[in-house]
Length: 176
Image (cartoon, rainbow, N blue to C red; front, side):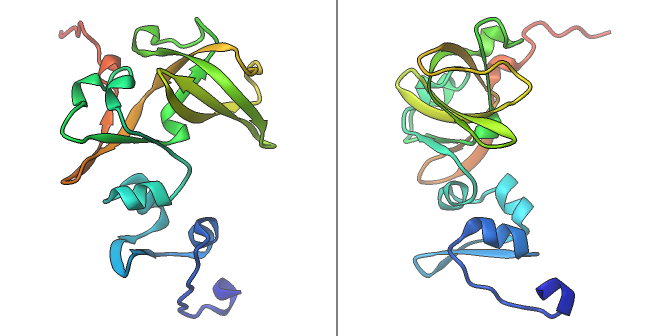
């Protein structure tokens, strides 16, 4: 209705899905302080604070970054990771192309979501979740899997940043 009428509106909600659907611009406020302002896409892709990163979208917080294969080098200085489902690739052993960058894990739960599977995983004592295409072979609870974490949102008390899995880098580049 807001679109049809074409008027500027202020809409206050605690429902992030609702906010993302109707907003051209979002202001995320926590404890009376503006955390971030921007388009829903910008806020989702480039969260400026850990609060914003954990508030928008589904994610898992990892307290010990050293448990994530490809991110061991970032451990220390109170660094934690926020991992979104789309940052993770999961497959049966041998299914992941970059096996050297993947870690072993186990399927904890699988939930049918209509257009995809939501897969809950555990690896090195860390709980993660990702999505899997209905076109892929179905995974089952307690099944061993390979988990490739492509990137993570890292943060500590002073800064935050998105980092790619370093094990995905080509160790032997060829220059011509």
